[in-house]
Structure formats: structure tokens, C-alpha cells
Image (cartoon, rainbow, N blue to C red; front, side):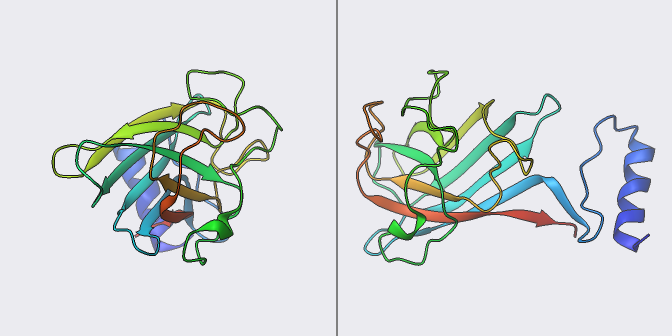
Length: 182
């Protein structure tokens, strides 16, 4: 057993933790904590992080901490099907993540794209903290995994309309990656 895994096992044992993180046996990476680092698309400034944390019930907690947007504005946040932010406008991330071929919808709609994460509003300084629980996603299992997908922050709010919520330009993009053991 590697020193990192041994240390993690010891800490969990001593802490009496009932929910041990899923550690990939060959890479030593924690599979129930992932993160996308959001970088601005061309001509924009949006940046920050979006964390994905696996929950005991199998759902995924999404925590976004974003900055450098216009003050007091509302923006959509979506998962897109391809983890590629290389295009200046992030169009390389393709369409919303929709592996079950469902209609578009807001998080309050049960029947929606897996990648429909809703809207957040910035404060007077152009920063935002947003949290939600996604029951239609998993971390890396075969059912709607987030690993390797792109997170897109849009210029406008998602209005819930078809086919993709009319959320406007892509102002920030990041790829969801596993957070490794330190």
C-alpha cells in the first residue's frame, strides 16, 4: 500500500469516518471529489472553480465559486458533453450533456438533461457562490458520469425553454477532473 493510501486509511480509521472516499486502486486518486477550473472564453473574464462531491445516497453535490462577471447578473451553468475548452468560444465542448435524450429543463424539472444545473446570480462585486444537489448525475459510474465533461458558464440565465434554455454565449469553461491525493 502506498504511503498516501496508508495515511488516508489511518486518518479515516482514527476519525471514525463512516463514509470513506472511493480511491481508485491503480491511480490512488479520490473518485468522489472532482473539480473543474473555470477559465474565461475569449473576450470574457469569468473564472473560478466548480466542485463535484459524491454523496452517500449516490447524488452529486455541485459547488461553484465564480468571479469576474458583471455585478448583480444571472447566469446559467451547464455540463456539456465533451471535456474540451480549446475553442476560443468553448464551442468545442459541444451540446448540453444529455445521455438519456431528455428535454431541456431547470433543476426543478425532474425530466431534464443531465447537464442542466440551473442559474446563479452574482453579487455587487461580480462574484457568485452556488450549490445544488444533482440526483440525475454520478461521479464516474456508468450512469450519467460527470468525469471528463465540460462545465460551461453562460452569459444569460437559463429560461427553461427548448432546446437548450436560451442562455447565450459561453463566458467560462472548465473540464471536470479527479482531485488527486495530496
